[in-house]
Image (cartoon, rainbow over all chains, first blue to last red; front, side, top):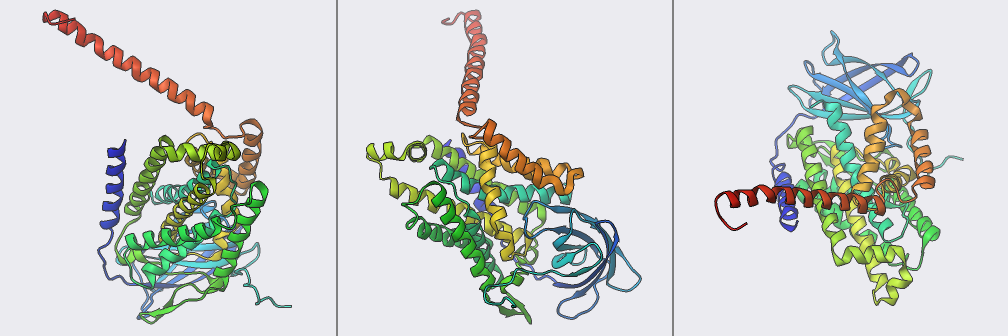
Length: 142
Length: 320
């Protein structure tokens, strides 16, 4: 049993060591605007750009998923593939959520650029707006 | 493997750490609603280490575990005299305190013209280690499960060791344990420290898996779930909390038709199991029965394996 434990610990350490080589990557930024389509379904337009040069990022595979920050790992929506529009760096996706509320939209980029951008949005039945993070103590408005 | 499946399996693996952390305290007879606080400390500490200080993932995970373990020791000492409901409330208060502190915590550094770091209620984005180091989702999944396997083996060794017996003894009857000459306080603080470290490792992995954390993630919901995993899966073995996570995230994730009702089902399941099987599905009795059955099978295999050898020995004229 002890030798198996040592072997597993070594494996875990090797797995960690194998993940250390650094590579320079292009960082992406995104502008997301969504509007309600059907019940709990939203059409989202996503504009992707290079965060340093602001050049649009086109020709990428973009998967759009979502999870609820207030319930980590409990509600995560199966990612859908976004289709690229004619405008460079503009993508469109329809996402189906499980309930209304604040969702962290996960934009997974793959292809020439591999990155993830997270956008916090509040999805309601008639509109989509900025998420409302809990107010820190001392910052409440009276 | 499907990216979505990798995502669900990664979630199961990461949440298992905080479930094991709560389970360890349950072994010593303490109910903690505050393990999400150590999960949060581990997530922020490890995230800051890689995203702001440029540390390696290994060092960051160790650092996250050390910080959360130290915090757990600090909480463990003043709560030594508390038991049952009082201990549960104290741990919950600590976790809420941590969450509120992270709502106020701002520590950002400009990296490549972009401000990166914890920004209060807006959270901590761009923990991009896995992207900067070209680690794909499957590789990270392997890392999570390698660490989880090592943790499970450590638990199995612990349960066979004197320390494991002491933890269970304290959990069963603290007074009796003290009468046996066991320094209960010292062992309870030790259990709290190890549990904090485990939650910290889970938090570090979570931060790098999702690349984004915010204080809201670490609220009471996560604490209740991590405790419920052990109570559903069973307290007889460390596999119990893993079974609980698998039921919640794995099973309930697969019946998506129920969508928003999953939490109600989960709550109902916890309530039902607490009545029918108060120590979970894999409780001590079931584990003992499985162990006995396993030993019988092993014995039968050994005996049936010996027969041909004896026959061969007779056929070759050797000793019977």
